[in-house]
Length: 374
Image (cartoon, rainbow, N blue to C red; front, side):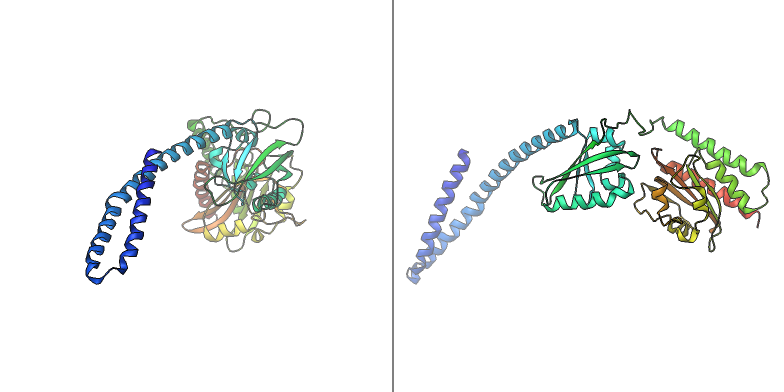
């Protein structure tokens, strides 16, 4: 503080001397060189003394302020993480910036995975538009909002989402804080209901994939198939249940023909017959895989029409409550022989990159078995 006051006094003296120099411009012409020398001296004083002094004071003040700010931010982050209420901090597009421990347990979604992704993507499809609209309204300053939504992994449990606007210090835009609470008597948790499958280790996951690969190879080599459709059906039965809840097989590339549809036995919202009657050309994911020959892996698909609609006009992904999918072209030497679409629904763990790579390996084996029947 003393240094700041001293600098202020020195600066005030400099300002007074500058005013005197301005008044000296009216002196006789012969005396102007003396005034000019004095002005140069004052400029040197600013460059050599006052400016470095100002930089030192600024650096000291900034360091102290930054340290205090960092301590304050760490304290607030710790409080945010340990609050017993499920909290998420979002932007106006519902993109998650921070998720606390309670929200991780409540939603069954890891904080590291949720950050940077829209929170609306973790909700059931019918709730997403309303949640985005209410979030945008809160961010505009239209006041706090509250609405009932449903998590995609637990669609039967109503969740009350309360939204309020926040203006984080040093940021130009308003953020939105959402509090999630069970609309019923008891909040769902990872322990009390379906939640993330425990991590059993890389070795166990690798062994399960190798078992699946062995089962697929055995099925393709055990008996010679008579038709390409029979190869697809045999492969679909290996994948159904143990690897995917739904398996949809389409033969061809330019002209796709649906050959096999296998789904859960207890599925009430959508039947296998609904997907069998569907035109594969009306499924954007299937058409894209057949044309481009690249695997599509989606977790909580954002586009409800990505796999088309059923006879009633409802999106298939919404009716089947698809939480992750794999759409795999069956390619051999660059030529697409068919397409396999695999769905996982409800609380089942999403497809991983390792599973997608294994499926890509099996797809080449299936394509080879189909090509031998040409």
